[in-house]
Structure formats: C-alpha cells, structure tokens
Length: 197
Image (cartoon, rainbow, N blue to C red; front, side):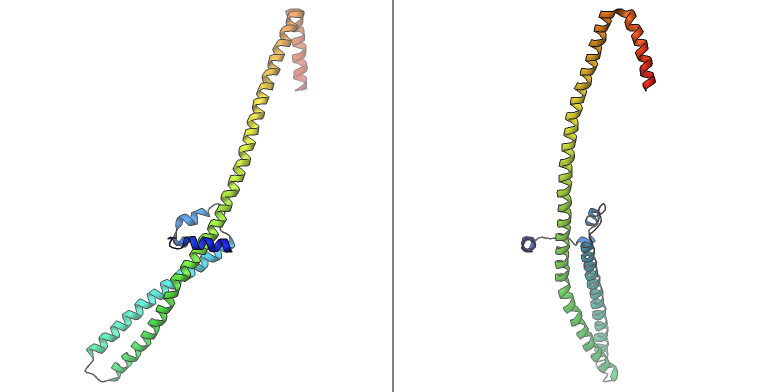
C-alpha cells in the first residue's frame, strides 16, 4: 500500500490522459484482455464521465431556461401579474438546481482523476508483470537456442567425423581387398540395406 502511495505522490503534477478515451490504452489489452478489476474501474470511470456530461448538459439547459425567464421578467416589468411571480418562483427553483449541479460537478473531476490514476496504476502493474514474464521467457528461449546451436555444432562435427571415418574405412578396404572383392560386398550390403529400410 505504501508503494502505491509513493507512486501516487510521484505522479502529482503529471498529466495522465483519460485512459478510457485513449485507443492506444485499449489496444494494449488486445492480446491478453483486461482483468476484472481493470474492467470494473473502467466501467466506473465511464459512468463518472457520462454523469459529468449529463450534468454539464443539465447546467446549460437550466442556464438557458433561466435566461429566458429573466427576459420575460424584464419584458413584463410593468405587469404586476401572476406570470411575473411564477417566473420569479421558477428562477428560484432553477437557481437551486444550478447550485446542485455545480456542487456535483465540482466533485466529479476529482473522482475522475482519482479513478483514472488508479486505473493507470492497475494497468502498469498488469503490463510490467507481462514485461517481466516476457523477459524471463525470452531469456529461457535464448538459452535453449544457444544450447541447440552448441548441440548442432557438436552433431555437425560428429557427422563429419563419421563421414571421414567411413571414407577412410572404405579406402583401406579397397586398398586391402581390391576393387573386385569390394564390388561384391558393395552389392551385398546395398541389398541388405534396402531390405532393412
């Protein structure tokens, strides 16, 4: 937990993009998918952003309505009728709703930032674990490749030695027994070889 706080402290003043709006962030998960914890936080962040958008739209609508009512009041200043009183009452209601919207809107950016930072930390934990695992597997594969290279070199040398040995044996046999005898044995051993394969 202290480590997480250290990360959060180090991030103060750093600009972190809204991850749920960043296509590259989504593409990071193309191969392995998102953990349940990341999905939950992503959903929470999307909900906060939607709520922020809804409140901003509501605020605009209320301001527009208030402006229209104020215009009606100004135009009807000379009239002392119910309409004027009704408009004043509506404006008071709108002012209350505007205050409520503004209060809610003041807290949402902080919640968005907090959730986005937490989503970034979860993402970093997830991908740094993937990086570590990939590095470990890469090192193991490299070790295997190096061993295969060594074994290949040894086997190439062994094969060359067998081929040289065969040529020497055949040459000595040929020198000792002559071409006619060797030809007889060549035919016999070629037939035996065909039967065993």
